Length: 255
Image (tube, rainbow, N blue to C red; front, side, top):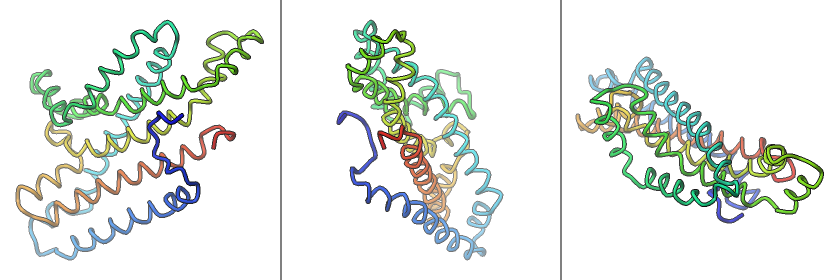
């Protein structure tokens, strides 16, 4: 099972410490950077961009894009991985994986701009969300394939031997055993999505990238830092939630 994408360090103690410390680190970073920003109320640029209303709006837009990407990736990559793991589809699986590889290898900003151009300059939520979903597809697709292919053949034969259909074997034996791999892939994909969503402002979809862009253009390090730290904290929070899901949603015998 070594061919999977997994964020697990391999040490249970280290993982427990990380799960405990990660949200605290994110919280401390956010509190510090916001305290510094709010203390600079005399700066017009800072007070206009770093206020509760703007921060909540941009963070919500960023989170919404990330959740939408996760839903799309799960709805597309998991069924596709299940199909490609079947013996009759294995000849085309390298081609599909190659296409997914191309999607992830392409520069994320390039995908956004390409989608923007293909839609005749349309802007908005989905013009950012769909290319980011393409960008984040590979980890879940590959982990689903690897997870299903690593299932012990004797378990599959035993299921077929007691009269289970191919679909029953897939859903009752193979898929539960592949869940830890799929969750690890989804965790990676979500962190990629949160990071890439900082580019959504290119196509008018908002998100925390707007603060980073504003801070960069106006050479205001406070605004830039607030955007960057909030995006990083959101990525850490998503990774933490993914770690909890891996830990508690995996079958008990595989934890």
